[in-house]
Length: 319
Image (cartoon, rainbow, N blue to C red; front, top):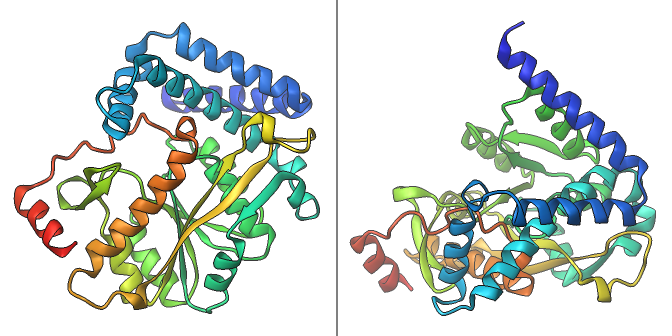
């Protein structure tokens, strides 16, 4: 057995041990564990290991260079608390979240808009970002018998990858590997099926530049192109955790599952359609993040690629 396989087995064994422990603990104890882990990462682990400077730079890009240091630190600390709580929620989701207790766990925002989009009979592109609990969003649609293909990156560890695949497919969804997803996305949309994917990562030099928190950010244009080509409807949304003082049921954490915007590709017929659609779903994601900035994963270098002068002028003219 080679060293890499041994490492993967050890990682999976540790993961299963933590999984077992978290499933046995009551919710209040699990939340305390998550808070303790967040404190350790934020206050003990060296900042260069947690990419603190990257997160701080991104937050100031979003909210202004003069954003107070204390506020920046509060958001980063809240981000780690959110991420560890999200991991615990995913672990406990299977035994605590069912269709019959859905309204105890979730409240809905603009649900009718989402239902109308699904009821069109056309393929739907469900877009979200690394905001809130993006796993519970997809899980919920499976419970309501609206399954979809979930685009996700393959994990290096095959046993961990298999676990997360089973988790995502437990309510009827299916997984689409991010590596080489283009071909399968075409097949799924051609068959009229719906897709869920995240739309908030840097797309490099080939992306289309649109404003994200008022700054040009390279964004994948394939989403708009697919929507236009396959007559799809775009639904932008996410599930964000309500503040503790707004949670109305102590049995489990509550979320708001929000439909922030519904974008009909048929409304875009001009030459600048790709830019306009991309800007609109990016603006919708920004609106979600502003509700709870500490629930966004600021570690990603969203503004990594500098805008090309020619591309920037074209985008401004199109807008």
